[in-house]
Image (cartoon, rainbow, N blue to C red; front, side, top):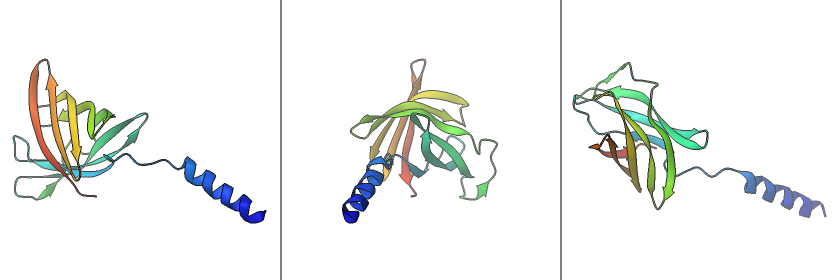
Length: 129
């Protein structure tokens, strides 16, 4: 009886453990118009996913402190299924927020976005962890 209770308790704990979304983790962006790129940490925020710039790099690969560090680059992002995500993405080099489409394929993330009919390719980001 004691074993059965412990088994049920263990099952209840595993059943309530949240499963991480495949987009969660740290991603390296492609270079922007200025040659800069960064590391984005994606995590839940409310009912959606958000990605915060945690480190910036210049075109030579040297880390630097950007005024955008700590800023949400990805926001209001939801899993649409099949590796597709939609939400918002902020482009620091253009100082614009775009309606985004993200496509996850293994350890790569293809990023694109549109604002007022103007669309931009955000490149393919690589998963760091």
